[in-house]
Length: 588
Picture: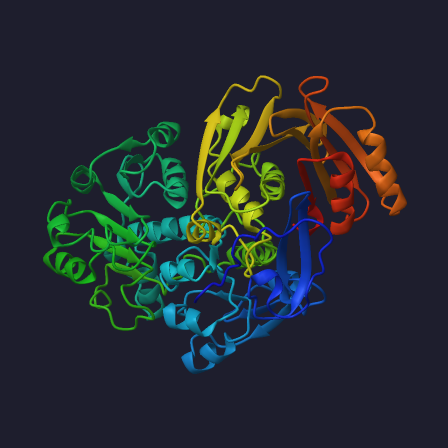
């Protein structure tokens, strides 16, 4: 999927400009109808950013395609905002044409969203998986196309953990085998003698969210819990009272082994023939994570040789599975991938992905996006994202054209958080007005790379003037250093702009703002007010920022309506402004 971008705005001659309405506006060669012309101006140049008509004005509701069953609560959330369509995602002949004009698609595990499907979906912006695993979604192809991929990572963790424990208990006490015998008219208690869990060792393979829940529940049975997970932070196991061991040690010590790893190149076939020669003959192995992590043929061989006492299996290398080498053993408990199959998990998954789709189609940050740089965002950092976007928009206006690099700074207590997502927010604001395609948290790094803009992030836990502050710094095309800073204040976390080009300020961001740089002298404020008043443009707020009397100064205004380019030109000429810019934040 190709992305067309508008080139950096060209400089034009000063004075009043007539704006052509054809397809080649301002020499930018945009092949389509024009929706809105935004003008940034100063005495020496007028800069235009053209936004295509398909991003402004009345538009139809985005289309969401539901390709598999979704909870009623999730459907209701979607239908309140979007046009919702339905198809059978498992039927490729129906899926591909259905993707042609949709903005989002929601799937479970049966629908394959691969490169071919994404290529058919020219409008696609979001792929949402109503569950955890993403084996059926080509995340790399989606990322290249600028498509966000989201899942519901917390929706089924309790259900999955409980199912693993259910398999373990059923296996330990031979519950399904005894039930089958009794239904067949056989009362044979001695044939189904089981084992207790108390004082047994259980090895947890993978101490993620589900593995942690299983460890907690099995510890309540007075089991000794050990775990193997080379990526788990030490504090996690310490908190749970779990002893971390190597893989071979876990295999040799455990009476029960429960698998809770993702399936990838590193974990596929992790428990194979070699590993199954290391275990105790009385070990029982549970896999309710992903098929293929435990080699089914190797496990069948170990069961046949008496090297493994039993297994509880919910997932298979190929699904649906009706013919496994494991199905012939009486000491194996089987279920058809039921880990997430509870009404509670389905409800949570439907609601979570519906909310994520709404956020994504609104261009907001999606906490559950899997292909967005920055990963999970701390709750206390999220209020800073809209502010950071606004700072990016204001920086673009002040710079007035292309910049080779920007530096994002986070100072104060927020520096102790993972603030990497602030780079994305800054880029989303910076490029929001200069690309034909909407800039999102997914494609913002690609847009920056295409435009040759380097973005860096630095943190400092010391903030001299404010509890916390964000700033964006860079250089304008004419070599002038540009900077803008902001903070959140008070219990309501109110947004404040606190720095412009090194000048201190304190003003709330507004839908329509103007920035005027000039040499400090009497009468300038009155001139600006008189011209705006003559045009029936009401000033909502104003601040004059300066280092010293008679030196460099800047007027920052918030006004109740957009300021036309000719009025900006008039004000700039009347006060001899070296910088005159407007920005409309209502379009974020």
